[in-house]
Image (cartoon, rainbow, N blue to C red):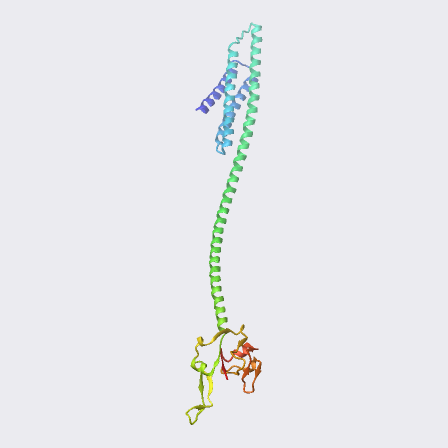
Length: 316
C-alpha cells in the first residue's frame, strides 16, 4: 500500500510539474527541464520496482534493498514537498504587463523555480546512480549466490558419493576382518594339528625289564625251541608280542630323549625289538649283542627308531 501511494504521489508530482510549466512558465527551457524531471521521477519509480523484484536473495541483501526503497520513498516525498512549495510560490506571483515590478517578481519567481528544479534534478540523478549501483551489486551477488548454490550442490553430491564409498569400504573391512578371524582360527587349528602330528610322529615307547616280567605284561612272547625230557622247551627266542599295550611302556619324544637308564649296571641287557644295537653308546658291549652300563645313549634317533616305535630291552 505504501508503494502504491508513493507511486501515485510521484505521478501526481510529474503531472503537476508539467501543468505548472505549461500554465505559469512560458519559457521553453523551463518546460523541457520539467518534462525531464517527470521522466526521471518515472524512471526512479521503475528502478525502485526492479529493486523490489531483486529482493529475493539473502536476508542481508533484502534488508539493504528495503532500506534503499524506504530512502527512495522518502526522497519522492521530499520531491513532492518541493513541488508543493513551488506551486505555492507561483500562486503568489501575479504578472501585470504594465507593472514592471510585477514582471521583475515573476522573473525572480521563475528563476527560483528553475533553481529548485535544477537542485531536485541533481539530487534525483545522484539517487538514480546509487540505485543503479545497488542493482548491479545485487545482480552480482545473486549470480554469486547461484554459483555458490551450484558448487554446494555438487559438493553435497560428491560427499554423498564418498559416504557410499566409505560404507562399501567399511563393509569390505568387516568382511576381511571376518575372513581374517576365520583364517586365524583355521591357522590355529592347523597349527595344533601339525603340532599333534609332529608329536605323534616323534612319539616312541620303551620298556626295560626281566624276561618273566616282559612276558607277564604281554610285551614279549617266546617263540621256537624244542622240548627236553622234563617237558621244557629249550632254545626259545624272546620276540615282541603281536599286539602291544602303550600303557606297559614309558612314553618319550625321540627328539628329546636320547638317553635311557638301565635298572642295574651289574647285569647284561639285550634288545628284544628290531632296533639296531650298533646305534647305541653303552659302557660295555658283548659279542652276542648284549651290553652293560647305567644307561644307553642313542646316537642317531631317526635311524634307530625307524624299524619300530616300541623299544623292548630285556635283562639277560
